[in-house]
Image 1 (cartoon, rainbow, N blue to C red):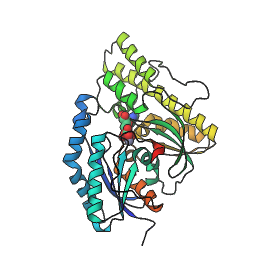
Image 2 (image 1 turned 120 degrees about the vertical axis):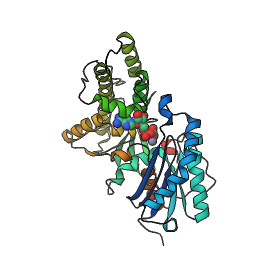
Image 3 (image 1 turned 90 degrees about the vertical axis):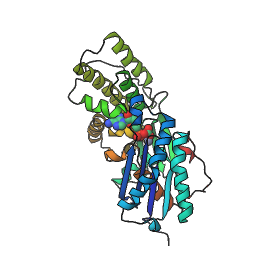
Image 4 (image 1 turned 30 degrees about the vertical axis):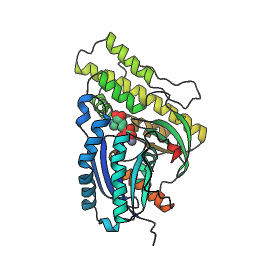
Length: 338
Ligand code: KG4
Ligand code: ZN
């Protein structure tokens, strides 16, 4: 008999995290994330290395998720896996592993859109959260304002015209040679730094626009450090803090515009950049002053993880949306294409 709170195994391998989680409904029973550190020395993800690393650890990560959970493989009601967007080789590792498992265990198979799974991550913390809501999705690959009208029912209100917000953190970190991924490093360096040290531009793109552009900001940082060589750690901290505040100001302004335009007062903040402490703090204060109910996932569910894939699997399962085992990986899958 079909359950409301199915036991789902989620698997994620779209970029540089190999992750597996077991959930019963939105209750996470186990969650394993293996983050590939090999890319650090290249200042960005090397696709070929990413697939090889996934291959090395996928079975161990899934086995550990099962053994750490309260459930056995036999008790699973379904297997959910990311099939796009992401790096082709990386996606194929998780997808094929999940297909093999679903086939051998004769379990329902659920192929999940990675961007969509970011939107639902806050449900792991707030299981009663339901659409409609507005979502600001800010990750390494995407920066979007989305009107989430229902499960799999979206309207994109605005998106980046060039770099994603997370990508701009990563690129600025690479310019300053301070590590990869750039977001967490810049977040940490910016604590107690002077974010008014440099007045970097905020690209608002016209007073009603809900689109974003971060490539000009990155170029401004490059020009600034070319003209003003970084002489010590304190200066580096002040420069990155000034950059971070410029990104946060743009994200908050656009988010507020979208709230006012749509009159949606339930707002979800999702994706890797949602882990940013300055963004969370500023959003919280704006939410309080504007009667907005703000939901964001715990830090571990902001960046790529299989718990959000499992949560999406639960939602799909409850809607009877299952996939065929011949589905292929789709590297450039759009949010409204699944
Ligand atoms: O969602 P995610 O793990 O992967 C994608 O789907 O892209 O996001 C990764 C991005 C990276 O660009 C990383 O630098 C950024 O999220 N990020 C952060 C923070 N933690 C991760 N950006 C700003 N502040 C953070 N604390
Ligand atoms: Zn992601």
